[in-house]
Each structure stands twice: as C-alpha cells, then as structure tokens.
Length: 257
Image 1 (cartoon, rainbow, N blue to C red):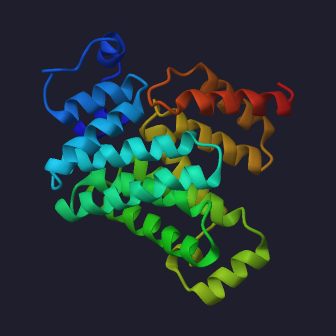
Image 2: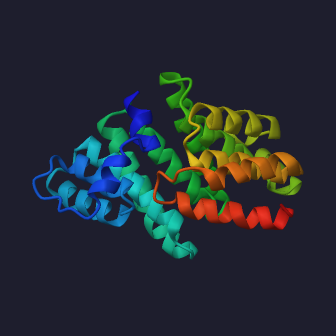
C-alpha cells in the first residue's frame, strides 16, 4: 500500500545510503524530499519543498510532504512558541493539501497530526476546535481506509489527552464547548485505537510509544515496561523516532526496569 509505505519509511534504506550525496538531477522535488526526510534531514526537506511550492503552489505531493516535515520539526522543538512556529504552518499546508485533493489520505493525515500536536499547547477554545479537527480528519480517513494505522493513532491519542484532563475540565468542555470529540472520549476508545494503530503499523515507533504511555497512565507496569523495551529496540524510521526512544529509556528507569 503506497500510503503506508511512505509513512512507515520503507524508503529508509535508500535515503541512508544516499544521505551524503548531492540531490541535483535526482528527480521530482517530492522524491528528493523523501530522501532527505528519511535520511534524518527534515529541515532540508522542508526548505526544498518550500522553494518548490513558491513556483508550484498547487502541488499536492509537495504540500503534504512539507506538512509532514513541519510536524516533525515542531515535535523536535522544546519551547511552545518554537513548536507552534512549525505546527501552525503545518496546519496551513495540510489545509492546502486537502483543498487540492479532498480525498487524499496523506494530506488529511498530516493535517490531523499537526492539529493534534498543536492542540496540546492551545488555549481551551482553540484547543477544542483543533481536537474536533483531529476527530473529523481521522474519521474521514477511516471511511477511505478502515485499517489506516495513522487514523487510529490520531483517535487514540485524542481520547488519551482528553481523558487525561481533570474531571472538572472534561465536564466544562463537554457541557459548554459541545464538541463531539469531547463528548465521545473514553479510556476504552483510547486503548482500542492505540492498540489497533500499533498492530496495524508495527514499524511505527511513535505508535508503540503511545501505547506504552497509555499502559503507564493506567497503572499497568508490566505491560508498560514490555512495550517500552520494544520501543527502544525498534529501528528508527522517522527523524523524531530517536527522541521517542530516549523518552522510552527514561520511563523504563522510572519504572525500575
């Protein structure tokens, strides 16, 4: 499946071998961006795509890839302002990609991923709007592909973050904000979607890490340790995977493994 191959990083062997080689004449900007991205150079991938989009603003393949790089770069930043400096443009790029191809799964997914990350640092009103965007985008993907691991992870993480709020915060949100994403949230939904995501796309470090986080949050020490150990042993695919593996090692130390 083309979408899963691109997302899961099955191109990783070629990028790592070619990481130090020049890109001139290699092919289309989207292909060069994949080489850079999976070679651990998301900023260079973003810069290449940004330049290409100045002359080709309607290129769907470039738009969703630029959103992907921006999300990863935002995740890597430490400060909230710095994170949002990448995540806000990622949402815009996702919007543009979806506008060009409303049924394009890649565009919908990376817009949802950007919105989900941005919601974690947003105020209550905007955060609720972003949460609903994640909910809507994930369900739109599942209509097109019911087994899409990325969509299940978006829903699982959304439920996890909402249920991690205090009871008062959830009550206020469900009562006054009236977003379906808030009303439908539950720990059962979080676990189901995170589990399906991890099983559907087992090579995704983030999906295994998110499942381990849920086990840890729910007080399941043995399951958390087992999944975290698995995370540390996986082959990194996306540029942000190494940071998730470092976090997994820290959590293992805290759990006394």
